[in-house]
Length: 136
Ligand code: CMP
Image 1 (cartoon, rainbow, N blue to C red):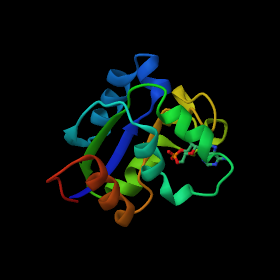
Image 2: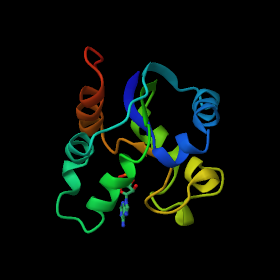
Image 3: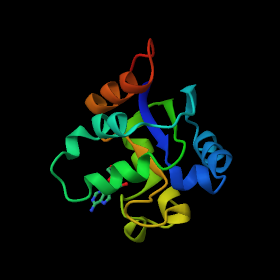
């Protein structure tokens, strides 16, 4: 079994889509092994997206990610990272495949409803960012 991190973003919590997203994850046979709800500070959002330092969209991304509550969770499944990225779809909902979470509920490239770790290495870092004592 492998683990990965998903964050339900403020555009989805605002539209009351937490249950819908969790239902999609469970139907796709991801096991939720940790979950919480919090409101990120600007410092936390910037630290989480440190890999995007210098990108033109970073300031707007930080503003968006601090605009409302987020729901990070640790998910378990065989090949979790790749399986979750397939389920959530492309970063830009306009380019996401039909049937993916972002195709279905994403608003635009920023308000794309969910974040999913892009590698096992980043999954380990991102899980540790939000959860103590939850390994990969
Ligand atoms: P996420 O998968 O969380 O990773 C970085 C986030 O930056 C991305 O989803 C989007 O919410 C946001 N973003 C905004 N503009 C862009 C862009 N042009 N390219 C990539 N990500 C973007």
